Amino acid sequence: MIVSALDSKSNALGLGRRRKLPSVRIATRYAFAYDPHVLLTQLFLNPQTKMLRSGWRALAFASVLYLPQWLLSDHSETEPAPVGTAFPVNGGIIFSYALMVFWVGLVSWLCLHFLERLKLAALGFSLHRGWWRDALLGFGLSSGMILLIVALQAIGGGTRISLPPDWWQNGALNASGLWLTTRSLLAALLLLLLAGALEELMYRGYAFQTLLRSFPAAPALLFFSLLFGLGHWNNPSRTVFSTANTILAGIWLSVAYLKTRSLWFPTMLHVGWNWTMGAVFGLPVSGLRIPEHPLLTSTSTAPLWLTGGGYGCEGGAAATVVLLLAILLIWRARWLQVAPEIAAVWSPAPAAEPPIGLQLNRD
Image 1 (cartoon, rainbow, N blue to C red):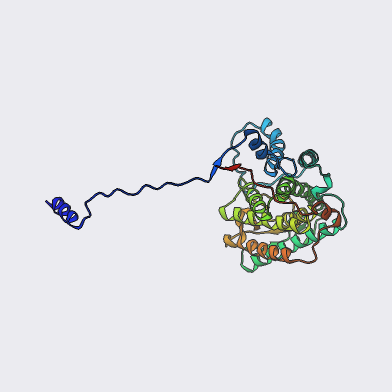
Image 2: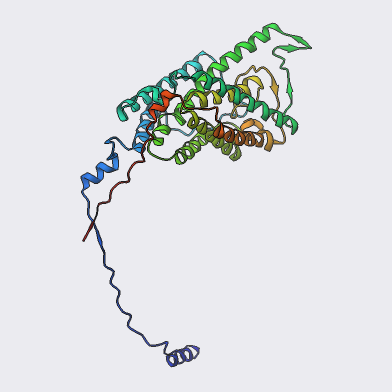
């Protein structure tokens, strides 16, 4: 009854009549036509340089780089290392890292030579003018950053520093313990130097740089900083906040590379950060104790939001503040310059890659 009443009212108002709508014709001005050979060529090759597109170059680098690991691994999931794990610092580990650095350098040279016709010096690890200055500035700046972070943690009540019993016992110096600590500090420095060079070659090296030759810096910077953070996901005591801080550290190191186009500066920032945190203060380095016999003993307790707890400084808010300040400082620093030899590699500025042509033709 309600339905029939509504029908009669709509008919009276003229709403129930069906009107024939005028047909609309859309005239297409373009037709899509393509040559499969041309399309595939443009998909892989830059039509301006006739070289492989940068994305494919980065993918080729990663594929060759990780091929030995993929072939030799058992493909099982990696469990996070136990909390409080002491990372071994011995000749075998140091040799393994040296071998990995050599392998990444070799793959980088192959890609530079065969994919871009560039010399190995373009990678940024050559003894260019002022390389030692970049190295010393990097090590000194990051060491100072750790000093500031530890001071903030101490003010917040989460870090207390003491002399370790390895070389200070009952108010007296233990000479044999001091010699053991000294050797431990030097071995850790060598290991962390190789580890820093390895990570910089992987995350700020060829793959990152080849994308910079075709795209704006921001996408490459954010992508590789994200990979850098996720690369530490299986470390002991990691949290979402520690991962976010590690991504922030990746941005810090990427900005350091962009200011100098040299890997010496970010690598020594990386080394000074890890060595001062682990070997000098005895704090966890990304959840690992490096080395077993540090110069000092420091606590990393509550408030954990400030200190990072078992993950170390990189998991706390004190590091967040200092990293943000360091990024701003480095980005605005006029005392950081690109060496003339490296500037020649990046001059003229690389042109953006043209998009893949869809070959639209008029009707």
